[in-house]
Image 1: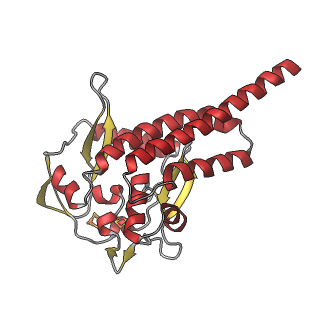
Image 2: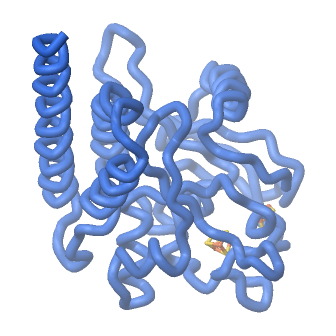
Image 3: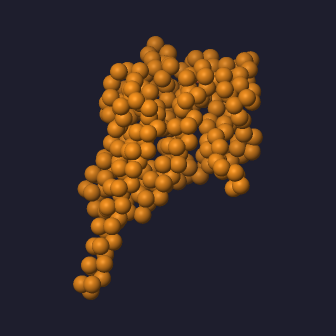
Length: 251
Ligand code: SF4
Ligand code: SF4
């Protein structure tokens, strides 16, 4: 499987074109598709595009009985999305083999808590608004050259097999918060000195990805963590605008 760098401009544009074509044929919960994973491990190597949502991080943390921050530190790679300007966390491959650290003896060590990107494959998930109705979640079947097509599943059954049904609502809210966060970050990030940018990114990463008690419902915690980000960013935005006003006065 070809590794790609997520969220750079060409990757995002190319990916968006592919997705838009596939979105012309969306799948919903009771729609069927054919696929059987041959468990070759091919999709667990040379990957740098497995993005982890807070939901994924908390699920892995719960399964490994560690804190969300430890998942990020031990297994994640944090970077700022070139287009979104928000911190993104991708699953970090092992430096020696370029394989996923959870691939042990050809099997996924966190099978029941694997990231949604892995669990859904070959499905992809998106939230779309058709302009008239509220946004809704639908699925696409990615064209893949692995596995076999001799098993039929509904989307719902596939999700249930990985305990992902509860992730839909979180995904919906996460998409919304990530878009809003991106709008805020784009307004200020480039005006900040590099050291402050770094501190801000670390703080936002902590709030949005790490600050969860995995034994408690995640959605209210996401709402609260997002609100903390919003307060922080509003404060910075106000400081920048005060500073610019002072500069104008001084001229
Ligand atoms: S999804 Fe495809 S590449 Fe991944 S393990 Fe299954 S058959 Fe192999
Ligand atoms: S988390 Fe599991 S399924 Fe996903 S890349 Fe790693 S080993 Fe493969």
